[in-house]
Image (cartoon, rainbow, N blue to C red; front, side, top):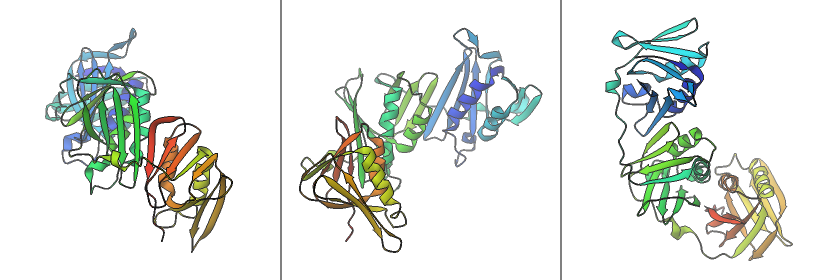
Length: 378
């Protein structure tokens, strides 16, 4: 195998596939990046057996030659060393030449590296997915859906299913839900499905975080292919495979209250900053608890009290307060995460009592909601 390639394209693709490579693997060859070269271009693959990423660099693009292929072939090179080497090479082009016994020569300008490679035949094959049911979603919308839900997945392995985002597709609508059993984030979007039937799968939060980092902020469509145990996201020159989590996701629709006793409309920025300030003295505490009380004349009081440190009280003007008086305590972090995920300048919060979950929505957008369980403070 021998080829010359533009260094910046190689560096970019190596960084993409590195997101799937981990040093903590029981399969030694997965600490490497697989490089496959044919007349059409170069394909790089990284995998940790949960996530696999394949980046493709075409030989020519828009009339420009990106790769000059002298000999086809494939090799697996140590990912950590290879990625560091290509980043630091001196010239704009890199020549890679695999010699006998998988010895690989990497040349750029006057710099020459010899890396010991591994036989690409030993590298696990990526799954071949039946692509009969494909639906499409713009990359920027997919990134938004991930950003607005993935933070609420559980980080505890005691209920593995909750470490993922539940994705349901039916009747041209995509519904994403994440919960760690103390909070819940849900976002809906209309999509072009072109598929029959419905889907209900759970994708690991870790996979979606990595996918979000390598998708471009464009409205280019991403194709999504779902099978029994894998999901494939196809973007331009990029394939991203993830395993699906096994098991049934809990029915979260029952958790969302349909009635409310106290409704507050407030500007996101004012509310978020007040909670942020109140949490400064609450952080030392076990669970970062902030209290909210409704006062007269449309005023909300945000406070926190940590006996060994001190206390903070701040009043925020609400745009509207309707219903019963309320005193409630909650995790400042959970509410701040929720507020950062919402879009728009104003939010409406529906409370059903001091010990019941409350719902936060954007005032003029019902495609998304955040639900948070209060904290007992007595």
